[in-house]
Length: 255
Image 1 (cartoon, one colour):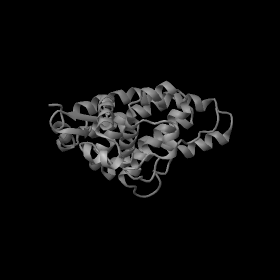
Image 2 (cartoon, one colour):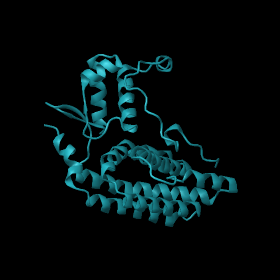
Image 3 (tube, helix red, strand yellow):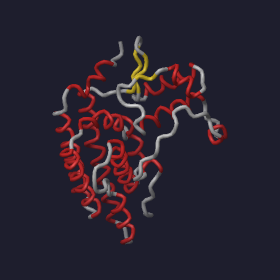
Image 4 (tube, helix red, strand yellow):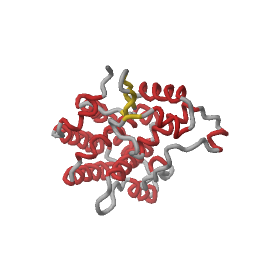
């Protein structure tokens, strides 16, 4: 297996926010991107960069003006995003970036318990067959999640995504990456970020470090167990989060 290469989405350095209302550039025109596709991409990019957060309302008129498209493509894009679970469409109140309920949060973490455990197991099994010390050293660098000192919320989220992207790439299972609810996970992280504490960050870092050690040692069972223990600790921490974290979800149910 070749040395891990970081993709743009998995870069250790968070991307800078771009302008929301960009006009289609030459590359978009060349590849024939449709207006609804461009709206979808813009909203997804806004979510990734934290420009849009769970519970935030999307104003059709603002999107129409900033993107230079009519309401038809805007509404088609919103319908598609609602079908993918990224936004919530309500009959009388419009479109909102989706916020998960407490029950949905527990269900999502239950899915992650299984999928991320498998992800860590596959990565450890792949590392076990590496022949080059340079490959292992490169992976070790890639699995460093945080630098010394405090990071802002969005940078923490970006580093976590980088950690999981690296594990997925090491394991090499493309299907696993396709079934992972990536955007829903990102939305959940954004939703819970205001309730993250310094102690919670330290526990989280310790969990990632334990997973990384098991993966680098090529111990598949230990990697699986460490990852699932980390997810279950996260679930226990979320159980203590106040109901206010889920209030936006309750206020945006379909009526």
